[in-house]
Length: 177
Image (tube, helix red, strand yellow):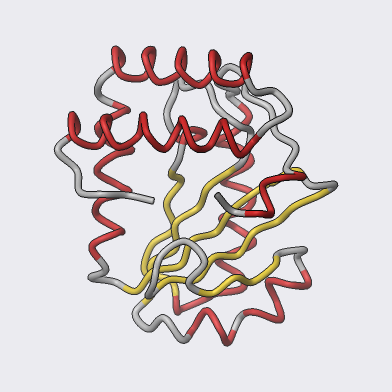
């Protein structure tokens, strides 16, 4: 597992109606930075699913025509407090993340249009939004994991990833990171 997870501080809590507001505020800033390079900005991850428990990390998906546009906006993203990690999650993508005191505040995933990851990420989000029983089961699982591993993000992530593989199969979605 990723060595950086050793010092990662995290928490899991119930759905917070502030999460969509945080996304909207960040999306406005990102639109200013990426400008006409943006084809879409989507709220994804647990914070985008009403009723879903999760880490209070806002996950944002940006779709662009040309992936090199992410490089052109790196300096502006760094001024907003983001770290640039090209191809950190999957190849043919860029990740910008904002952390404070080893706590992950937000992730911005940048993909070029046509990348199959885009449809998979959106399909999983939409599946969860329309299947409240899956939201309950996934929320319960994450809460139980956090209770077991409150100071061990590596173990939390390992077990969560195993659960996700089965969830993706139920959702009929290809592998999503």
